[in-house]
Length: 88
Image 1 (cartoon, rainbow, N blue to C red):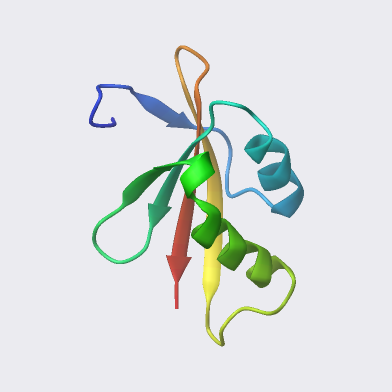
Image 2 (cartoon, rainbow, N blue to C red):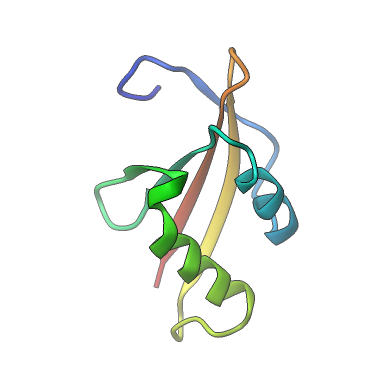
């Protein structure tokens, strides 16, 4: 459940690059970046830095030991949230 009371349900397991790109084209996508102990929700328009790092990962240019796992979550009102978990 998010701070605004929205209940989210994960759709399937982790998603790949193609699905991430498709979801990011949605106009009202929400992005939750999980890195360390404080997850941070970002509007897609402000998620450039994490999305650039994710693209470097997909392109094989990420820092050594960097890893990303991305999942698709939906609310009962059909809102979309992608959770990007970054670790190193």
